[in-house]
Length: 323
Image 1: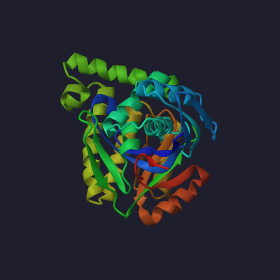
Image 2: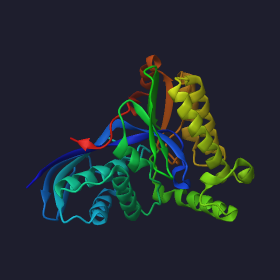
Image 3: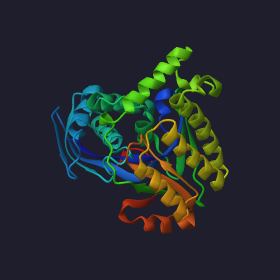
Image 4: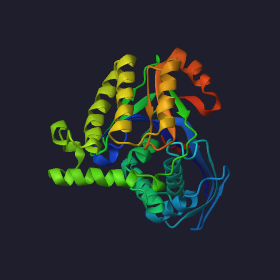
């Protein structure tokens, strides 16, 4: 049977959280931590050995990917991931994308990047019950080395934004595992959809600040979209000070308006700034997981070392590819 060897990366979101499911803008980057699937095609049976143990959803995600793809093939494979589980770095999306790519390779099928991302998004939603946006899956599919991705989550247009060599990206795990199915994620999404419907809009992407000034949840979405676009410009211009300022504003909005931060995440953001980071914010959905920070490239390693084994300097990586 055909030998299969593929990998797909996790991601860290520099700015733009809880905007993707509101048809907004995000600025993530694929990272040098990934999920690796290696084995051989079968005639339909899915046999996976999770070398790192996986998590409670791993097997459900795997079978959901197979079901959504609908290809008459399976896998007998080993799965190993270096994306920390429950950290907000999209370990589940890396798994879904890696498995989808493996099954497509096994079945001689080709999907365009956006179609592949939508398949994985649907599979994750069916497997976990969490109505996630498409940022994580699309970043894992379409990541580009040395670049962040400015993604329009309505059109799914992607504009690579080079990360200047003088800017370093640091990721620190709060060691507070998060489980979106057990969080208020779905509640937040529903609240946004209700406001958009009340305003007669397709999504909060279309709202003005004046329309949502008195609604903290919607206000976060509108102001965050503006911050994402400004942050992409700052990154392209190597304006580290402005990028850091926008990230700190984003964290404050996620903490105060969207209420998805925690005291531990807030303290970690403060500690990173005290250690020399120009800016920091929670990354991902919140409720735990990781904080992302930016600094000068020459300071990034030292700052990461101050936080020990739970921190690393992230490099922007290519998306899903052969192993």
